[in-house]
Image (cartoon, rainbow, N blue to C red; front, side, top):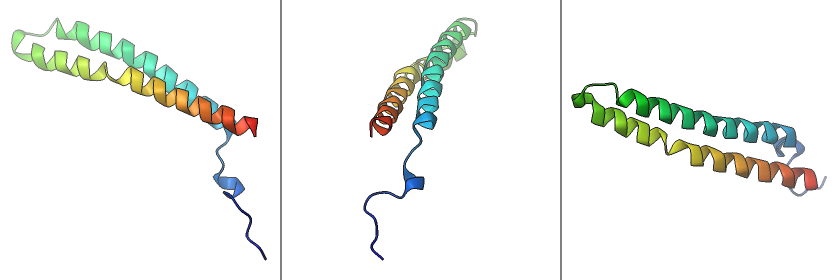
Amino acid sequence: MARALGYPPHMIPNAALLSRAALACRAASLASIGLCIGLWLHAKTVDQDERGNAERRALFVGLWPPMFWLIGDTADDVSHRVTDR
């Protein structure tokens, strides 16, 4: 019996699942913007000794939104490619 070429059907990602993952990543991107703002405002309320650490934490969380957004864009692009087949 000859083996079929390509991936087995259970390995091909489901387009609906990828669309939901893209939406979840974009929601996480927007939520991390809110988290960053919240951490930054909280950094203004702590004493001077801990302020630097709190501001660094807020800046670190501020790097998350573009990462989550790009992961969501990639998942959305792949889901459109799967449905175009």
